[in-house]
Image (cartoon, rainbow, N blue to C red):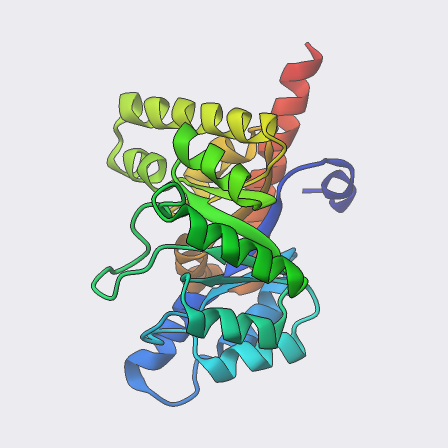
Length: 262
């Protein structure tokens, strides 16, 4: 696609999650493949943000990776973390531009569901204030539930990231009716969040084929994509994989703009 078209079209920023590069490295030990080199390649391919999740069990990204990413990567960082005192202390030391607070269980393969902001409201409210004082923009990774969206706004978070896993899974399974239902649920959630003054992000499980429908939502300002993008990179390289996902975002934005002008 012509680079001038990319520059002219407004669409969501792309955050590239590099966790699974570290997963591959850790499967054998040693230092290869290097997630920081992957982050550099992603930036060269057009990534707007580098996302990573420092888990309590350090199953992929490690503390030393975080320090190197902070020192060596020139775009904004999005530090995903559980709401724990250990992670808050690390975040305050690293001072990433963005923090996304997520639920975390040791047994899960990947993040399952959204953060229960309503159920732990006072804790989340205090953490939002603490991280804002550290200069971080806080996003809460939640389901597209009105109760969770409203709790997030009351907790003082400027952003929410809506969990797109159920939609992505329905697309993967070829269940068009369920995918449409989940897409409508996300659209309603995005509209509700924006009405409350929240910046709205989206992510989890998105592939090249399912990214466009989310990117086409006018409320979405950032998309965070990892597993499918890294998987695609195994065949085309990290830079090209990022370009392919960016192209999907741009196509969706162009289609939305064309539909709005009719």
